[in-house]
Length: 369
Image (cartoon, rainbow, N blue to C red; front, side):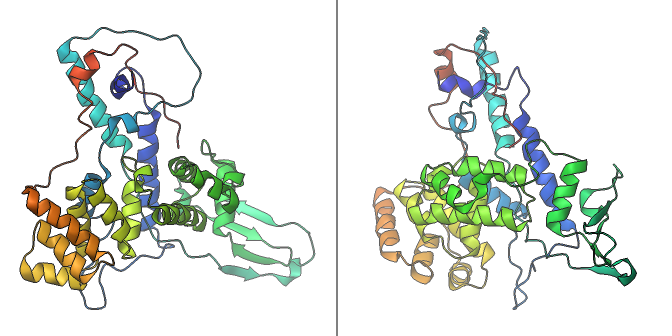
């Protein structure tokens, strides 16, 4: 029965796709606003560093993420309804599986990573004549529907008479009042308290937390960054990278570790799980992000490919070079051919397997997070 869930988006609408696209658009809009701090594409030596939005980086992260259809279309809690049964020919079943894979690719679309926004501390006027006339703040908000939220003008009149621009926290709260987003609360739910997050992480519920985080916070807010950092750090410390594999958050996790030059644990995990292609892609991504590192320079100088890339990384960058070299010896003795390919679904998910399973064909409705 588990395998049959793979084809479930063929007869009902899936809200998860809309939420992924919405998140990506929101992040992109946040990235291009002048209020955000833009990271430089070039290092001090004038060599361009790869950025998260680069096509080559996205291709590598997508490949590393993988495509596990059972994981993407895992069952969710919802109201029980009578099952529906549909009969399909072999051709229709193969088409259903193909469409399910395409749908899964959309659901795995990664939210973009953007720099944290800078605080707003702009004073527009100091009208001392108004001081003491009221004990409450007065907020003035442009509620024009056609105005993008990032460009919406919001100011606050303090009891002291000072007129200033609203802070990011005030802007988020007021925009939610006038233009409510489904699933978002005016104040952050208790789940985002650090103590509660630790409990969730101990239960390996990182994906659930990050999904809620996408709804509750803006992608460039301090709270958004804090939750993601805590989740990624916990996964790194516990070496539980598989918790996020084949989810839209695995790419950001890899990017987080690569930019901080802390990929030893993930690389070791990939080799232990016989994911050699992923390990090669990870080293390739490391060299793109750190083009001036010894590892990248040696790879370019030697025009290294395949296992040679891992050997150079082990010699120049890795803190676990002994294990990596030992694993590479195993691959060399086995005569494994290294060919980078596009991500594939699990071998067990196939049309032939689905033919032996009965049940309803349809993708479960995903909430906006």
